[in-house]
Length: 249
Image (cartoon, rainbow, N blue to C red; front, top):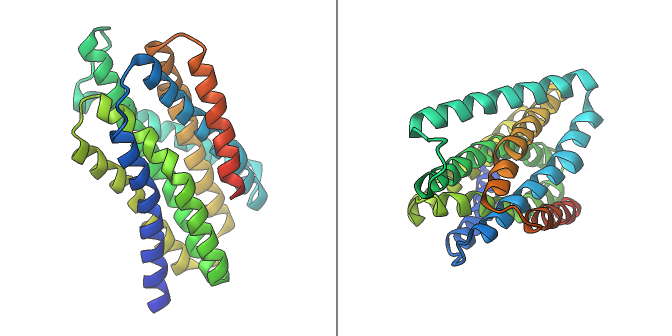
């Protein structure tokens, strides 16, 4: 029971610490030009593409068959479509192009990203929990690596929410909230230990599907709307490179 509690707390700490640091950095960015915001959203897109292509899908494919992976991805996409519709209705976002509504669109993007990253953090927590079941060294190394690559994720959440009109404290609150699912995942990972590989593969694929939708349905379209220059492509490429480096830590 002690090990279960410690594993959960470690997952909770490392899962929220990285995103919180990123969130604090994000809310303190002074440059709010459309060009800069477009760059940040494109950077987040590249980072997420790297996570999907070099972490989530390969891991899922390694432990299970193609059917589980495709099923998980489809369910993840469908779940995010429903989340998108819910957020749109809840906040009454408009599609009319005015100065006020581009801020609304940024806010919506930030909220959708935070939901998607909260979903993505759950299988990360599963990895930490099951890692501790194998050895303390493996569990800690996974927790530290996940914490480090959560920092740019926190930035990608905070910047659009802050520039969409949300207060700094509320932004940090949502950023911390999205990291809590890592602790939940760590609890289940440690509790079950030898959890079914098919279940883990579906969780990883589900997170991948959610992030694919966020990139293609939110981040890139919003980035291109804000600024239609080369900075969008540059941000995407830099995000991809940062993601690849983060995957190797």
